[in-house]
Image (cartoon, rainbow, N blue to C red; front, top):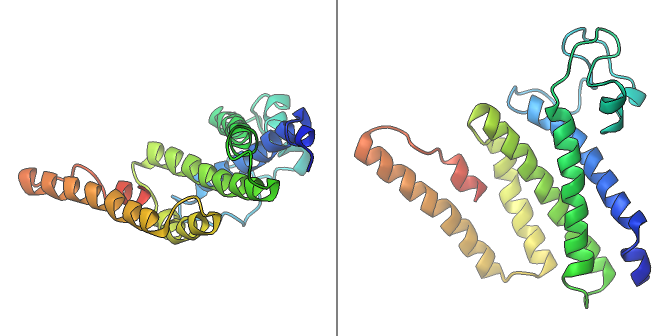
Length: 202
């Protein structure tokens, strides 16, 4: 890939478009994972009238703006947070693209920089999902953190940006510090002050 292709507006636009699509999927995860529902089935639908959302009404950002945040059928108003998550994730992935392919690691092969962009983007979207679930429910689901810990640890090792012992130390310290604070608070007050979910996240 040529340098001008990497830095072209089209490349940044593609990264932002990918972010908007993943932001739309993040909205599904934010809504369904805490409820114990599948993130695959059923297809997107209005939770008021239960009518399926057509593909042309499910385009990230565009459909929300076009329909003014309402269901086409029953006119139920959808939360503006759907739009916020899609736009924020689009901007986030554009920024990650700039970081991975233009700003840092410029001497590395483009393929390796694209691999970093893929991993970092997936990690960022995971954090977006966790953030909004935590805001809504004050918990971080184990079904995200438990598979995420080994998955992103392996990704870090494959990318080669960190030595294995640095990653392993991060796992131990990240969980250990939060666990120690949480346990000490409980021993002193007999009340839970911090859940272990924050440690698993770290």
